[in-house]
Length: 282
Image 1 (cartoon, one colour):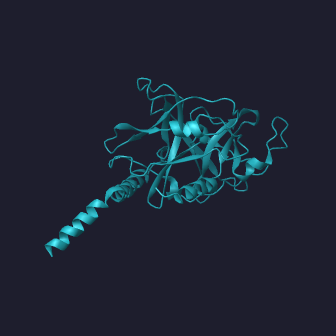
Image 2: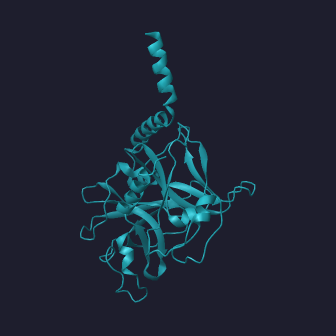
Image 3: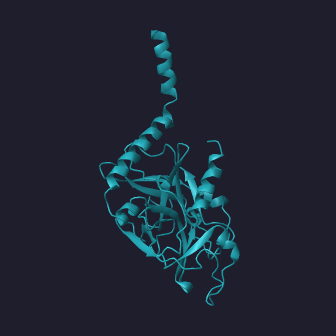
């Protein structure tokens, strides 16, 4: 009996690795949910956005490059950080000839002592192998597997706890929100924006003389009225229906000042991207 117990102990000890960390992540998520259960919608949305800082790791570890936003999704016991393709590669999808250079991204997070920490991701290979494309050719999204990379006391809130859908113009009670980080290293510099749902947001903007949008963009993205600001790229979007239920509605890509609108990658595309990564064995 003692030998059997010893064997089982060794077996489970050797296999606990990411499983125990995932269980801890699950526990943390439950705590996180209870913490925000009675807060207002702006605070609730803010808690799902995480600051991303891109920089050169060999430059004295200086955090003086670009600021963006990301969020997390859990699925099949794996954890993904989600943001824009242009955030992870430096290659812009509006003006693909323009790009910025970096080799690392820091994800800013807090633990249960409310201490601010950073998880560094080396993206040099991603940047090197990435290719430019225009916003209407492909969705501006990038997902990166960070399963088991955060300490056990990290607070990691993930958006799969919400159903997902597109905001509906027919329902005037819909309220559309997003929270991201301004172009500042201050982790408290969060910006909450509200958007309006235009009647043509998910179909066509070709009726507008100031901008002709290729129809291909609506296969994976849509527009909301109002412009996002610098640093909000990669922010998760939410809306509330007339029953006061909150939905995940996609991810901010880029803003179009010509039509006072922001391009949003559809939530269904976000999950399709996650599903494609789940097929890849770790």
